[in-house]
Amino acid sequence: MNILLQAAEDIRYLLKVGYPRDSAIRFVCDHHRISKAQRMLLSRVVFDLTTVLTRKSKMADCGAIDGACVWVDGFNVLFGVECIFLNEPVFVCDDGFFRDLRGAARSYRLMDTSFQAIDAILSFFSDHNPSRVEFLFDAQISRSGELSAVCGKKLKSFGINGISRTSRRVDFELKRCRDIVATSDGIIIDKVDRVLNPVCCIFKKMGKSAKTLDEVS
Image (cartoon, rainbow, N blue to C red):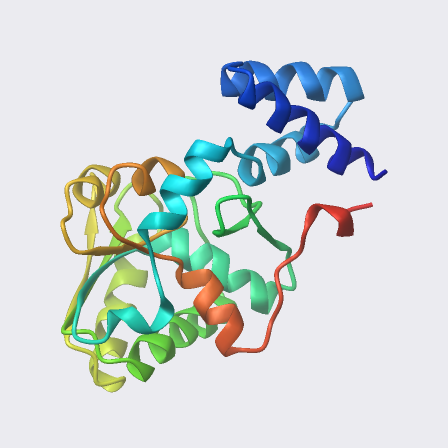
C-alpha cells in the first residue's frame, strides 16, 4: 500500500479512538518517517468522521448560489484556482473540499496566472446569479490592495453585483457571516452555517480533476 494511504488510515483510526488531531498526525508521520511536505498534505486532507459529516452537511451545491449572497475568502479561493494555471496539485480531502498545498504567505506576486484565476472565479459566479458577491482579501498580504482593485473592476465587466475589498480581519469577518461563505479554510467552515466549495466548482466547470493520496509517489 502507498505509504501515504497507510499513514492516512492510521491517522483516521487514532482520531476515531479519541487522539488529539495534531498528536495523531505527528505520531503517525514520525512512525512512517513522512517528509515535511507530505505531513502538510496529510494535515490538509485527513479528518475525523464527525468533522467530515458536519462539514459536508454545510456544503452548498455549486448551483445553490443563484439568488444568494456570497462572501468570498479571496486569497484562499484564488490560490486554489490559480493552481490550475500553475499546474500545481490540488487534492480532494476527506471532508469533500479541494485544497492546495500552498502555505500561508505574507507576500504575493501578481502574475498572469493571478488574472487568469480571477477571471475563472468570476466566470463561475457569472454563470449563476448570486444576488451579491463580496470578496475579502487579507490586507496583510502584499499586493492585496492592487488585487482587490482589479477584482472589483472585473466584477462589473462580468455583470456581477458586488464589491471587492481588503480587510485586516478576514477570518473574523467570515466567521461571523450568516450568508454563504466561499472558502476551503476548515477553521472558517466550522464556524459558519453554509459553505461553498468554490475550487471544486471551478475545477468541474473547467473539466479539471483534483488529485487523491494514491496519486502521490
